Length: 325
Image 1: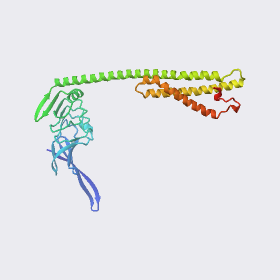
Image 2: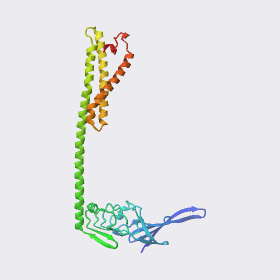
Image 3: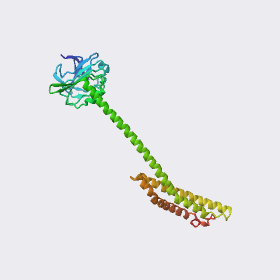
Image 4: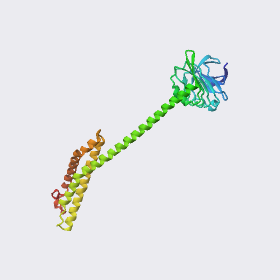
């Protein structure tokens, strides 16, 4: 029989003096405290008294002054978690429809859990590693293999169906644990195999990338090396005076730097095309055919712009005068 535990009032002052409004009523039964809130007209589990081992959540409770009320929520976390450290058994009320995961945490010593047949889903009991017995409706979607594996001390499961019971023994639970462990082992094996495959594929792709980059760099360099050799051969005349030779060497060096940047443009363009292609090797083979003429065009435009500001009448024989190329 439930007994009155406490009444919660909202106290305030007005012109007539102190006043108070009843907000909620606390009732206690078998070590469980229920709170009935007048505003919501709902009764919920609010506390478990310290030292209680066997918790039975009532289907309904007689609230002092408000008649019989169904207990529908365990939605507020228990304030003092030490009150649940001794709980070994919990029987849930059939009218509970709302849980908060914090309310069912800290039940590390729970050994027996009873879920009524009226429940549509399994309540969020997660930290019950010492659970030994579970009574639950068979229509609830619960993976018994995973549940048995995650609760190694579980020895008995009773499934409820239309008032009948079907017991799953410790031997069956052991077999389910073994079956689930095999699944985990296979998943781990598949994961490791997939990681090795991805690592091998990564190394393969890396080797292809290095090969294509080196190939592109060498192929693109051939015409520019030839151009640099010809530039030095045609620009430098060692029969002239020292000053003229120095200026011609400087002009040839500037031209070589320009050719180097043109080569870099060709290489980077070819690498970009290769990386964004689905056929990397094939693209790398033929990309220089496009990028070398493109880079040469850019180089020619840049050289043409420079020669506009550089005249052979400057007294330095036109450092980048096309007549010396």
